[in-house]
Image (cartoon, rainbow, N blue to C red):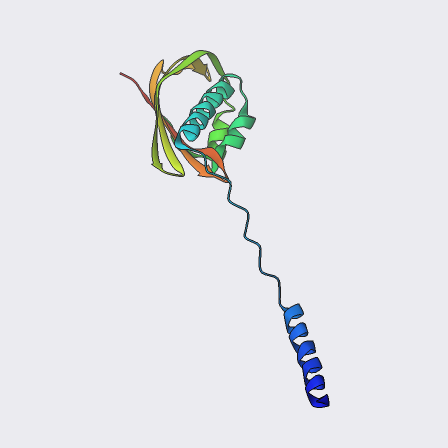
Length: 159
């Protein structure tokens, strides 16, 4: 009888030690933040593009620094430029009297990449040279860290 009591006490200590030494079950990770819908993304992309045009008019280079992706590529009549070169080109004094964007269309390439195409008319000079009055434009956007960034921009003078 004494052996059974001692054995019961020992087993109780062993099982209690094992039970206490086990790590608690990991709690499930919080639910991920719901992704933006395509309609929401489309609105953000178009609003961002309009803000960039307004920043160009108002000589606000800070917005370009914050909105262009680190690996952005800009294509213009002088060739291809990376982000650093594009920001430097924005330092050329431009006088923008007016501009208008029309026919804006967002095409999603996948859930984190989109192409914005549109027509723009402008009355502006840069470095004393008149810029084309009407151009067809395209801007590629990428979703990184929950934010849509401009990855590329290109303009072709309209005929």
